[in-house]
Amino acid sequence: MKKLKIGIIGCGNISSIYMENCPKFPQLELVACADLDVMRAQLQAEKFGVPRACSVEELLSDPTIELVINLTIPKAHASVCIQALEAGKHVYTEKPLAVTREEGKQILETAKKHNLLVGSAPDTFLGAGIQTAINLIEQGEIGVPIGASAFMICRGHEHWHPDPTFYYDNGGGPMFDMGPYYLTALVALLGPIKRIAGSARISYQERTVLSTPKAGTKIEVSTPTHISGVIDFDSGVIGSITTSFDAFGGTSLPPIEIYGSEGTLLVPDPNTFGGPVKIRKRDEKEFIEVPLAYGYSQNNRGLGVADMAKAILEGGKYRANSELAYHVLEAMHGFHDSSDSGKHYLMESTCERPESVSLELQA
Image (cartoon, rainbow, N blue to C red; front, top):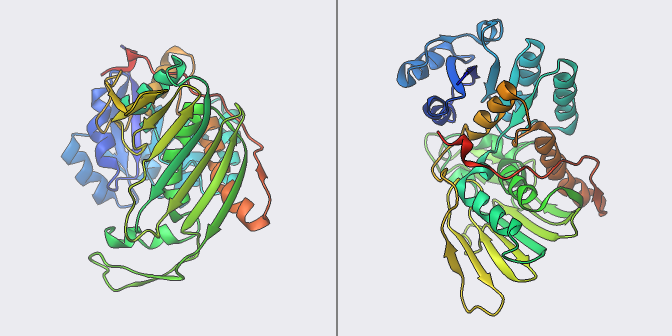
């Protein structure tokens, strides 16, 4: 099988799982990595056997590299994506696609100008758990989908993250941090979104870091930390979502539930690739766990890159695509805009519901 030559920009913590997984996919050949801190790139290259570590400029000027995986911080996503596209390379970026809608549009326009593809995390919806849930819906196991609920509720990253300040800055908060996982999963399950109603608040103007090495540092909060919203899907399904960093006592709520005319489906955590998936049909007394129908149930980050690479090499569609990523980016802003205006936010973008995964991507 022909391989696509890949370069990674951004050699922080998230790069490890990509470097570990890329060699597992027959479509991918990881040939270089780069970082503003070249020493960090060198350390990661040595650890994971990447042939070359270099500066960002050197990687972008290498004509043999066909696709760049952008693992920089969110505020740098747009600039790095556009630099890579201008250098003639396809791009796959970590979530979110960009911080603002304007930046997201610029990425899409640049890709179109150069006839290149853009993909974006999360690709967890391609994993065994959510794909099994999608399969059950497509097979009519819960009848016609009517409603959905999603919950991402925790006590805030200052309890564990070594440097949590950016989670409370513009472009952060629970919606922009974890919303991409939940909204991407919901669109993969139920299709595109038509309109949104949201309420958002900053519950605490200041947070205190409790984790090392910055324990005791004060963080001024400038983005909402508790957001609840209602989602009207094009299909007629009505969903609800709550994302919060303010639940210091935790939660017992499920990640995602889908309610159908013939049953209810429990969808696993969309920040993971595995299960469990459970279903309770009409008149049944309890939920029953369903065996996972696909093979990717571990941390398979990079699966979206492999799917995109296959489309580049062979033609056809890929699932973690730019239209889906931009639709999710717009939706996240929509919750905040609706809260600010007191009105529904009408989505301007749309996308296709990604096709179900087939086993041909198996490593």
